[in-house]
Amino acid sequence: MKKYNKVVLAYSGGLDTSIIIPWLKENYGCEVIAVAADVGQGKELSGLEEKAIKTGASKLYIEDLKDVFADEFIVPTLKANAVYEGKYLLGTSFARPIIAKRLVEIAKAEGADAIAHGCTGKGNDQVRFELAIKAFAPNMDIIAPWRTWEIKSREEEIAYAEARNIPLNITKETNYSKDKNLWHLSHEGLDLEDPANEPDYNKEGFLELGVSPEQAPDKPTYVTISFEKGAPVALNGEKMKTADMIFKLNEIGGANGVGIIDMVENRLVGMKCRGVYETPGGTILYAAHKKLEEICLDRDTMHYKEQVAVKFAELVYYGQWFTPLREALSAFVDSTQQTVTGEVKLKLYKGNIIDAGVTSPYSLYSEEIATFGEDHCYNQADSEGFINLFGLPIKVKAMMEEKTGLK
Image (cartoon, rainbow, N blue to C red; front, side, top):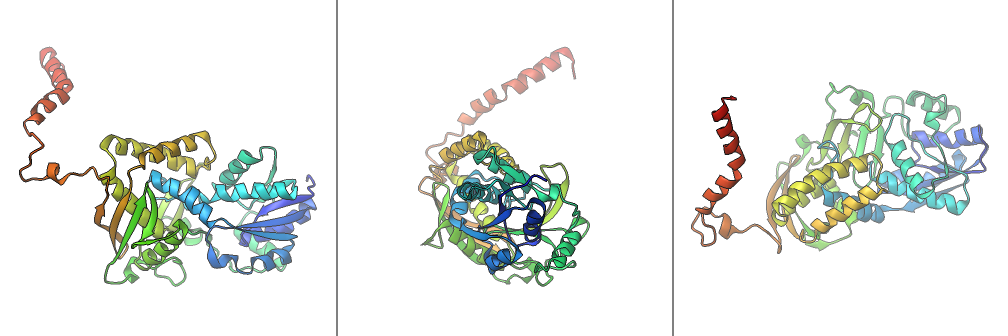
């Protein structure tokens, strides 16, 4: 193998990256600098530095990226209402580009020869990491052990770790593949690999961000979210940073069984994959934002923006955050959000999010026009001419068919 002097590793302290440190040293003879990005995974960062050093890293960077993640990645995606395949709120997808960008910055500062990551050759994350690396360090070497080493399964990874006395927090019986940040928690593997199996949401320790709808309280919880130009700025009247609001909504939504998704998605690499996602706070924010847009956006803008949302979600899912098209779509989305300001009230009850009221100083809804009672601004007789013109192509076609006997 090619020899490197210094390699920067995207490090989480999980199974994959824990064994990659000794593997890199054994196979490349290099110094390994670990970089852990704090994107809101909480206690997973506890004791990480001691573990990284004991495993063979020369140092560990722990980078606090929570606010940048929330403000520069989550909010633009929320404004777009981007959802992949109608369900997935992109929790892992938009966390990878920000981590990769910081990896490049540290690699350049440290004079590293290469950047390594622990993504599998079957997954989407390898694409997301590497596209972002290419955007900021086009000539940087990238090491992806899962694509080159002899290890073929998580069971073999555990055996590799045990042989080198690397401490792990999992066993062969509990090794779900998980990814956690301030936006979501994903679960893959084990019994979830068979779509016929119902996830055991009530099993102790399975759900981490909340409870199942069955275990949620028998009374509803109300939340009011304030937006300015499409961005969430206050919760229940209290102004707060986006990241702090997401954490708080995770608590509130999780306690009410909100935001649990079970889906089989189409991965970028071609296969279908089944996963369970917990996104309580994000699910609430998406519901609130879409509700506010109902009264703030005109029909044509709303309908076209729905098409843009599909493409935006694909770009995020495919790891194409740092691309001209994503930036152009964000510019379009921002232009639509200039009047998306107001308050949305939601009722949370046993996994459900129920609309409970919306207001905006820029509302396009007019009770005076929409009323079933008498009004003084809408002439119902005008609709006859509108229908005649709007239906003219249909009428002309039908006349032709009558004349020619085509039907």
